[in-house]
Length: 434
Ligand SMILES: *Cc1c(COP(=O)(O)O)cnc(C)c1O
Image (cartoon, rainbow, N blue to C red):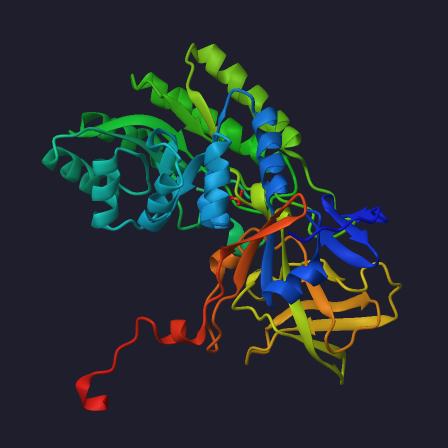
């Protein structure tokens, strides 16, 4: 156990603290974690995950909260959310397998995906999870599989409501031209078709308009469009058991950015949902699927400075690359950077933090005011818990790093670092190359 017994100086970014000029997470000094476990290192604060989940639960007291497992699929995180009563939104059989193993009940799982394999659909039917169907092709395949197994499967259709969430184009999912969902105009027809298909029970309706949404207006617009469809589907004589509005609530990655809270999210959609279901005299379960909000701010990525170079910019070369955190490269996203061993020191210059990967785009943070940075310093990239490790790769011959979970001053490894053998683990040579 690592303990820190000095009074906190001040707090940055909610649950993080600075003590003795060091960044502290979950009561543990980040510099001690880096020394003990090596770098790069993902560090997650367990209490923060549970707190974030409970905020969502309180904001939506009558809804089921299905955690979007793709945001961070670490088994320890799935396990702690299972214990809190979370359901799961899964996007592959791999995520389904992990969610079930973590103890999330099959009744609280929705199997999503725009291009599921037959194997995945068979698994969904055998296990008995709800499926969010994304196309007519999929509907018919699922019906055949269910009939063959003499089962009936509950489905929702993933609707493309054509709402612009005003976020990065790569994470907008509800635009008319997006690959996800059934166009709103085709929805009534496909429910009519599903109603007659053997093995299929149209039980719900589903959408998800995008991610890192910082404005509640698109949520309200989505809820209104979805409730219009609920009304039409109900008129077909289909009794919807659940209405799933997805999620996509953003978080403030920048220090001075403001983001709606889960309560704001609830205020945008609950009145619409309640008023419209009441008017229709129906009582479907509401499902919300937050991913990012639950995990993003719970986790930091610790990375050691290998080299500082004064060139066109002050380049700080660190030991983590975009193989571990691809968001800045892929989405131009911002992560707040702290020099963990000089966390409260005044800034002295502007630095650009770059990874070791052979790609120009391997940049974590551009032109940041930081305290004097030197070789050996420890950089913490904040808010790295969502779409961080879960999107990692071994690009450039780099084994993935370890993950540590901290709670009340204690730390546990929840994923060991890969070693160089892991680079070869599944590779084989044909005999002629031996
Ligand atoms: C990714 C995803 C979510 C979660 O999105 P966040 O932006 O992480 O909240 C929810 N539902 C579906 C269908 C998703 O694909």
